Amino acid sequence: MAEEVLPSIARFRGAAMLSVAYGSTKKLVMKLAEESGFQVDEAVLEFPLTDEDQILSALDSVLQPDTTLVVLDLVPSNAPFVLPPEAVDLCRQKAPNCFVLLDAAHGLMGLPMKLAGPGSLPVDAVVTNCHKWFCGPKGTALLYVAEQHQDWIEPLVISHGYGDLAGFYWPGLADWSSFLALDEALAFWDLVGIEPARTYCNYMARDAAMLLADAWGTELGIPEELLSTMALVQLPELKALPPGRHGYDEAELVQNALYARKIEVPVKALSGKLYVRVSAHIYNHIEEYETLRDAVLELREQSL
Image 1 (cartoon, helix red, strand yellow):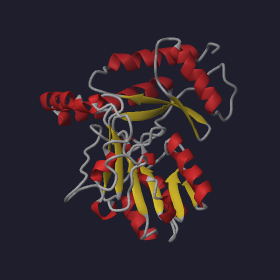
Image 2 (cartoon, rainbow, N blue to C red):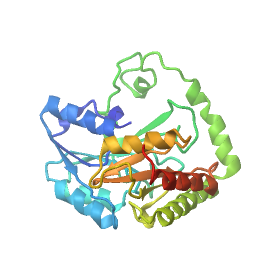
Image 3 (cartoon, rainbow, N blue to C red):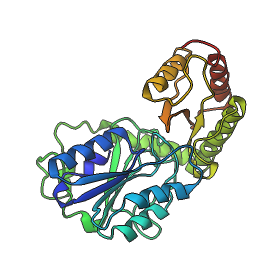
């Protein structure tokens, strides 16, 4: 998502992002930094998180007066905490000339989002997806750029509409049917009520997380007050894995073992620990998380 806003990279002299930023976004910024000669500083987060001060302190440690690009995830995919609003204020204080890009792929529907006017997100650009919590077709996304930056943000592909806003509408052979179908998604949320749906998802994610942590004798990777529609729950020790710190390979091994039991859930390796990232939508019910609970309890004494 973030790559939609970065072609005018020459204006950036230093960048900052959280260590849990989305993988492809991190690689993109690193690649652009190599090509353009600016430095990228990562604010490293340790898990489990205890409070939002941990996030703000890590970000504060990498912001410099010459930081001109900050990429923040509203809800990081790898570690789904809700970004504290103070994070943007901190960026403005420590790096007054920074361009703050908010990657809000998990924001639409999952959290209230206002892009313009009083009470809007105080960032320079926002990217979000309609095909996640909003239930739109894949390939539908939204880019919002604050008015003061619209004169220098350019499309990645130069096409017939180049030179004004229409330049973003025709990036090659685009299929617009997915965007046309968004009317049905909007009609669905008008019928269901997006606020009650959001409340259900938030409470279901918390209930599921507490259920799993209690059954496994572990802890949440993110405190309840920083959760929205997803949560991190530490896995118990598994007999098939050697004791000590675990990384990507062990996470993939456990995730594949659960998938073989017809359970699709991401397993994340953070700070040497393994966590499941559970999600909750309006079609989920607590019995599904009970199935996950029981499967992990079985795996504790089995080979993977």
